[in-house]
Length: 338
Image (cartoon, rainbow, N blue to C red; front, top):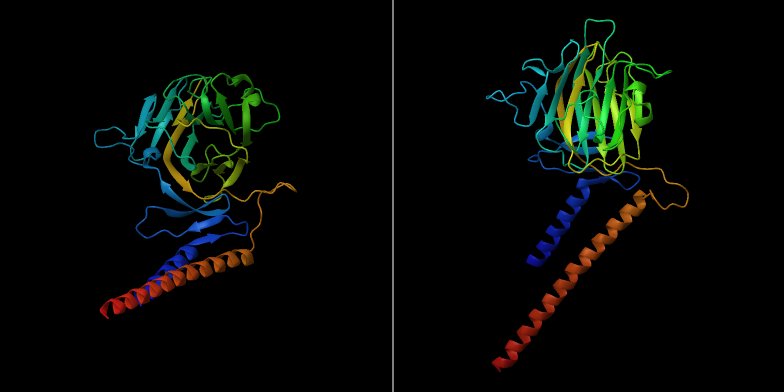
């Protein structure tokens, strides 16, 4: 009886585990059951259900500062001003300013999403220069690239509000650049030859809704940038690549801004960084590549049935061996008695 109970319990646990994992038509895991005591939450990433965990070390929200007027996880520098009930102002609407905000510890997550609320505003008809988000090997070094050093190593996302010399492109312009530590950003052409991907974002300055961007990264699978500035809750795709750049394994998260003769307010309202837990999104395969093989529901069901058969066979074999051994011992005891 104990053996039968153990077998049934094991089968029930196996069934529960199978039910907790859901797969899509491509055989990728869509969601994994998580107990109510887990800190993970459901989220949608790149068209699949996923789970994420907040990265406290790289998130920053009001009031920004601890009781000792310092931030536990971020350093502030340059002309940065902090209004604990409103914003972190990297530059004010004044000429020749430079401000920065850098994480104290590197971002070590492999798959992540960074959502930032920001605001670009000012009183002048002519304005500049813009701000940037960074994931770089070094931190806190001021320079000519939106307030950060040139020849950086890592990823930069530039929100460029002033057009220098880039015919046919509408500004403000948002672009990504991958730095190798040797290549300079060409400010005279607004980084045209250094651009990985980008998009025009007319209306992102003085928008009527909270302006946000969301950068999602899945190692070796995709890098995607989305913007919110037209309607609240409406995310517009800026760019997406299935060949993401290699980001240094030790990369600091930073935000910088710069003004020259022209100026603007560049504010960071909130930063929410998340560690993503999900499989890679389905990818289209070329004929004969063998990638992205489709697993049908019938095949999945057949595999699960075979697993149950093997499990039952194992427990019946163990039970038979136990019964045989018990009978043998009983026979031996009787022979010794007589």
